[in-house]
Image (tube, rainbow, N blue to C red; front, side, top):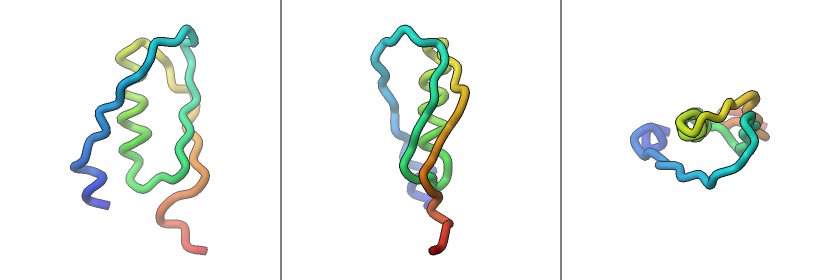
Amino acid sequence: MEERLINPRNFNTLPFKEDEVILVDDIVTTGSTLTEAAEALHIQGKKVILCLTLTDAENKF
């Protein structure tokens, strides 16, 4: 998990007209992917209204 925290994603986004965004990720480990994606979108003036994940890395089945 530590590697996730020191390995930034450097997201690039394509322009789109919607101002509000829902972020979807398959699994959340540290939350850094969603955080970095949200920051990249905020820079473009977008508002993240919801973040959805299917599961988290700590979930034990």
